[in-house]
Amino acid sequence: MASSKKKKKVCVVGAGVAGLGAAREMRREGHDVTVMEQGGGVGGQWLYDPATDGGDPLGTAGAHSSIYASLRLNTPREAIGFSDFPFFPNKDGGGDARRYPCHGEFLRYIRDFCDAFGLMDAVRLNSRVVHVGVAPRDDGGDDGVVRWVVRYEGEAVGTTAEEVFDAVVVAVGQYTRPRLPTINGMDKWSRGQLHSHSYRVPDTFKDQVVVIVGCHESGKDIALELCKVAREVHISVKPTAGSISAGMSKAVSNHHNLHLQPEIDCLCEDGRVVFADGSGVVADAIIYCTGYDYSFPFLDTAGAVTVDDNRVGPLFEHTFPPALAPSLSFVSVTKLVVLPRFFEAQARWVAQVLSGRRSLPSPEEMLRSVEEYHRAREVAGVPKRHTHNIAFDWEYCDEFGEKHCGFPRLEEWKKELIWSSIRSTLDHPESCRDDYHDSDLVLEGLRSKGWLTGRAPAMQDKDDSGGEERAPNPQTHL
Picture 1: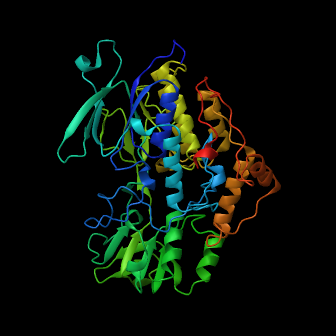
Picture 2 (picture 1 turned 90 degrees about the horizontal axis):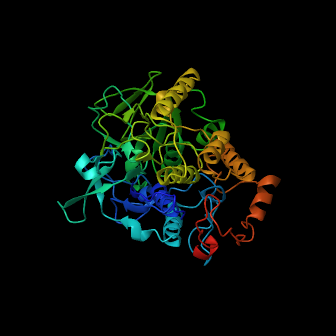
């Protein structure tokens, strides 16, 4: 590491894919990093937990993971993964080698990444962060730089400890606090209600009438799984353009017990669900597949960072709060980006700013940029709750990485592969993960990167952003 770099003591909150990626980038830049993880292992959301929020079926507390037993990735493994650590199948033939593997295969990949880059010694497991706040001046020094007190609960019940850090990177997941709709009668409806956060297996819904609210990815997956065991499955959707694709409509027509319904008007105490067109069904259970809210209950910024209708901010480039940058940053609030690549680029930028390799605009300039971004989104008709939805804007993602930290652009064949995957998901929701056809561009990309032979080409020896050695060929770790 060059002598001009500044070494910082950094706390990363969360040891999921974003947190581990952040830890790797901090170390590459020479920082002293500690990762606080509340669970007993690394992986974050991908650490499957068969237990659900039994005492709180709407999932507002309890289980951390939202993964259900049958979940498979909806993005091709060849297009995701860290930029220098491809998500190859396990070379010994074990695991799930499919293009769209099960959740356990991605957890295996995360653990292999952690091992390959020696990150485990930076992770403190069973350490739940309960408070992050600005350190008092007597703890933070007299240099005028903001430092942070991190208080966390240890493995032993009732034990807490705290430590002061130069910087905190918030890398917690997006899928822990369920976002629930407001429906007339919802508080009095006496039958089963749960959020998809608490859904695990279909067995408990055998021979039941189930209403699913929402038809995005989890809603479609769960509906198509439940219709194999339930008596009836009704999917309630808002009358929004594009809510239901032609492919999903066709899938519904393939199952006699799967029905599309308008949004719910009210819930009745006798179990009847009344829809906006006046029709209704008597249901045994309702599953809300209505998304998640950002939640940072441990973070105390005295109002400098807030969450308003799922807009976290103000955040310059979805990463730095202007008033507290660069000592506080967020890695993982963006949605519909290629993961974990975009989080990796964010983390590399944060690491380089902390070391002094890169500089940020003034707080005033950053705040103006945020306000301009928000105005532009509002003029475009984007709801506030979608502030951090990037919608696979390749140009923005590529420019973000190049401009801020010299991150490589996403290859064109991967962009084509992702778009073809999205089209297939819309057109063929039941078969898209197992029946696909690659274009010549994708096939050439797969061939050139070793996907068709199972052997990855040699990796460069040096980090293109500054000289730290990269890990050897990741194929040797998978």
